[in-house]
Amino acid sequence: MKGRSIILDHYEGREAAALMVDGRLEDFLIGADAPAPGTIYRAIADRPVKGQGGMFLKTHNGPAFLRQVKGLSPGQSLLVQVTGYAEPGKALPVTQKLLFKSRYAIVTPGAPGINISRSIKDEDERDRLLEIAHDTFSGGQTGLILRSCCMGADTDAIADDISQMADLAQRVLSDQSHDMDVLAEGDGPHLLAWRDWVEPAEVVTEPGSFDVHGILEELDLVRHARVSLEAGAHLFVEPTRALVAVDVNTGADASLAAGIKANMACARALPRALRLKGLGGQIVLDLAPMPKKDRRAFETALRQNFKQDDVETALVGWTPLGHYELQRKRARLPLQELLG
Image 1 (cartoon, rainbow, N blue to C red):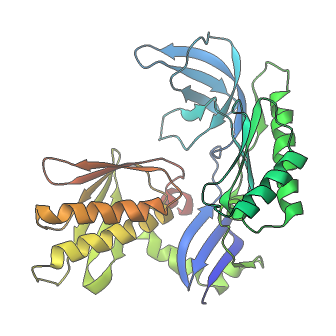
Image 2 (image 1 turned 90 degrees about the horizontal axis):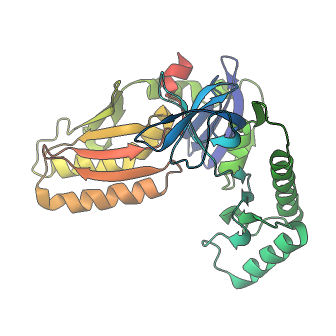
């Protein structure tokens, strides 16, 4: 199948969405039992953590942890939003900075003003979008960001999206109760696909489409630690309790340039591998041997490829042993856990 396709189906009873590009699986979302990022709670402050400036909170779905908090007393209620998935045995990561995000609009309580994505350069288009925003949105202390996919989008679709997010924000912020509650659920895979996979694509919704379009075979490949690269090179991506280990191998290539070729191929393949496998946290790369003079080119390639990935990833740098370290947000649960 050529071009881009978004396939919405279910996998073993879980809602799921697949993004295929030219017959290759580029992204896969599947529902989890854990609270989804974006879920908004009215939580109750429980106990502070001395020395870390944080506090444990009580929510309907168990303990949560809020970093860098001031002026909060045990027993006090507050609104928080889930920012990612918790590590096993740890509290949910949450923030007090709420965002109401949809395909075209992001509503930002406490950050007033109307902003348009910097990627939209055309002044006439920016003027059109500002007019839509001013006609639709009366923010006060709440702000609005219009996303890059607003470029050329239908006026009514943008206005409806703004109105829906503004209404949701108003309902959540105006709730006067002080009891623990879930005020908004995070988006499931089908909504996330509509929200974030915005480039033109064929959308397939018929039941059984994962089997028809080869998604199940692709998922079988994702389950394996080995990821094939170009010219026979490969890497192994293996999560441990402490970190994700990535081992790069040149395969049968014994040439002097084999190491840098394999490592550059790793830089291109790694964002997709981590995205599909749902892996985050500390990531350590054990690269193929290459001269130190080639490290800069590898870092540049790695940075360029991770820029195109939606999950926040920090390139930390080299260790004394010559490994390369990254820190990646736990935006998803490991796919292996969800697929069983």
